[in-house]
Length: 85
Image (cartoon, rainbow, N blue to C red; front, side, top):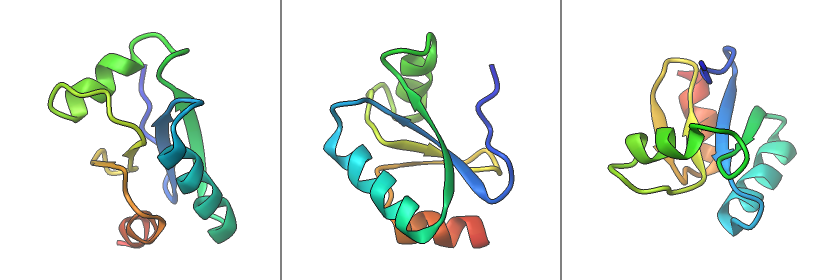
């Protein structure tokens, strides 16, 4: 399954209990940045994908950008900057 987001948006891998995920979602909402949220505890294979992107750790939020790059626990400012690049 391909989780690469559409241009101008991100894919955010998260969990329901992750405080950092909730904070980032609120910040993205406030800035009007679009995202697709994928819960790694509910979508098969995504926990393994997050591990691969994070050197063996299931660290969330992990954000996937349209260019295929990823960031772990980025700030909303970093997300905005990387989407504008």
